Image (cartoon, rainbow, N blue to C red; front, side):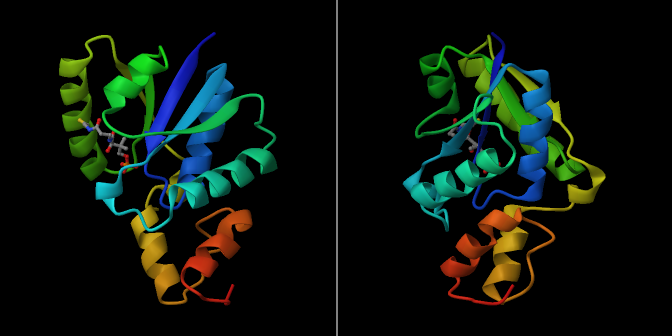
Length: 165
Ligand code: PNS
């Protein structure tokens, strides 16, 4: 069975993340979405909130048998070894992603030579999206309905104590 691990902060998940999960679920037998649970990374959403949001997305897209939500702390390479998996999925949007990803893959490869990373590009509609932008828009009460799945809008709004759309 070909399984792949999709690690990330998912703080919060965006339509771009969903796009990637859907693409990967068509290519691989099983996708593990692994949320980084690192207290030093100062995520806005708690691990539980991010799990809840991703579970909603999995449910809505009928992916229960193909996608699992998990979390990890520490090094990604250690988590991969624990899961007995050497395949990693990452999204590529713009050139600045490339530099970051390039550095990450080469460092990870030094630590775990068997690692292979597959990059997928989201639909052009989501190429500019990032979790940070969504948090900023939501923090000022802006409309985020174009950027995140509608199921998670209430959770994002709740975070900012904002009742607008
Ligand atoms: O969604 P993000 O924030 O771009 O995801 C980054 C992530 C979680 C994949 C990366 O920060 C990571 O793997 N962190 C775990 C710690 C680690 O292994 N660091 C060394 C990377 S070279």
